[in-house]
Length: 232
Image (cartoon, rainbow, N blue to C red):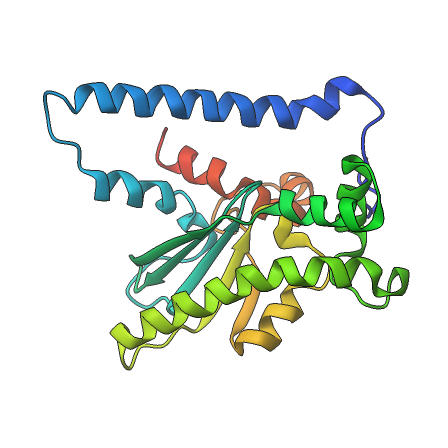
């Protein structure tokens, strides 16, 4: 139920919906890549097009036209975080770092001696908020987030050395970790740019009831909306 807080379902069935869906996704991805590799024996694979298409699933998070401000998309996954720079609606640069939401949960679990489900709940509840739980969770989470921050700074620096007078203006986050308490102000302070949580439903015609159901957690569905818009 929607009650303003994160919690785990008591039902094992519901708890496994997310895990099963992710496993199915990677199984299908593995199948599709295997088919492409087999086809590659007889015809050349456009790897750049394939790689870029993976990131373009996230473009519903932002307006993509020639008047759009240069934007860094940051998608937090379970095991990796994906970075993509969009300039005037076009994909300009991509990068990934092998740090995701699971690394945060494991760090909390190890340091505070918690089981993974409880560590996950602590992550979602306290995050980088130093005023909660005596700042214990924030102290564990920050070094892991700093790894992502360092990679973000490298990507921005590399991009701006090439872009010249077209600096990055904003950062848009997606994925479950985007909702980590304190993450938006942390990145805003560290990067000096506008930071926001993306919502892929902004340009989609929804009823008020539908908006109430999906708007608060829209960033969780960025890839799904992107695939739907591409009719995949």
